[in-house]
Image (cartoon, rainbow, N blue to C red):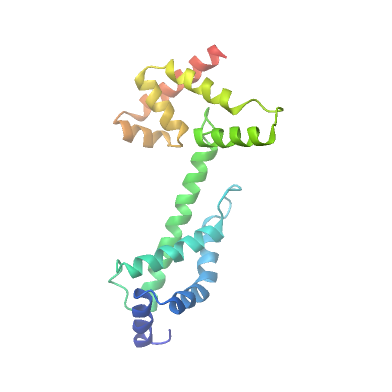
Length: 193
């Protein structure tokens, strides 16, 4: 990819989904994209996904977007790198946000899917040293049933990992209302424990 003419030819092959060109793209771009992802995720807590996942996903998304012809402004290597690095940065930001939500849920750290998976694992291994996740599901459902619709909707959104400001926007209420409702739920649930 030395000149603009060879880059244009490379880009056309990439648009056509040529496997060799996609492979070349991965070989040439992955180390640089990985370095950026590592830098963007520096200092982030341990997580399920990491900089390698971000880099791979960024290159995959870029190649897919090129094949869908979503970047008509690409004319040279510099414009390609700008787009690719922007995609990488955004994916790293998204991962940090996801991890932040996952780790800071306040009073609901386990989603229903996780509980169900744990229940299946406990049944498969006949593990009895942990509380049965099915009991946890029932308890959460009972506690949710005891809430009015306003409290329940905010609580479920919080359990799903939404940040308070996102919950406010989702339900068209103020941030203070979200905080007040969550506080009421915590208080009510701690009294019932």
